[in-house]
Figure: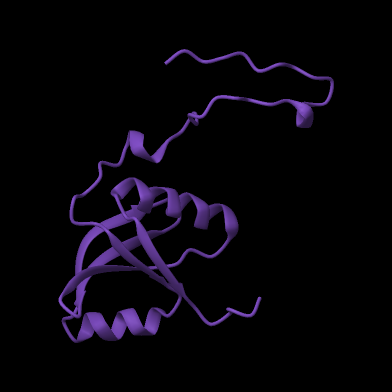
Length: 118
């Protein structure tokens, strides 16, 4: 795909790049998995640890960054396959991990944590 030249302005914040493709795309290094549809992102590590101890979770993938690996687990709820992972703290990391989850093929998300009033 040919890259278009950005119209340079005196102040870079006024420049606009009309390209719809990012330089770094999660889909360039993550292949979608057919069975990935529902994803719960939780900030309750203790719940994930308890479910792991009870044998209710199976690790099926992992989100990676320089400082942290976040496993993606598979479980079943009311007969449907559901995946669960811990949420990332911080806007930039959260956005990056969400892009990776979407690249895996997840289409439906529920996020649950203890700071919903913020």
